[in-house]
Length: 130
Image (cartoon, rainbow, N blue to C red; front, side, top):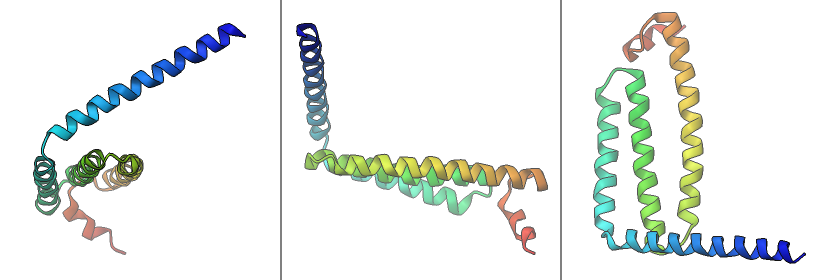
């Protein structure tokens, strides 16, 4: 039984070590001004919007939507870090799960359209109307 308690103690110490490392990372992130995160996230989001509006390739449009989602994730994680609360980071995790599902479904739709039309240009999508 004492070896079990020793192993449990070692695991508790490793968890404490992880928490101390995460605290150091959190304090490091807080040294960067919040305005920098807002500016970076805004630039990434605007690039994603421009990509969606300008490009005609469906795969690039899907990538630009992912860029917009990741810019929102960056901002949520930054605000969560500055507040010292983990709720924003949990929300980031759920957004990433939804983004992964969106990519899987989007690529499946693009693959089906490519199989029928031999192109991923979105101007062809008008021909799909019945």
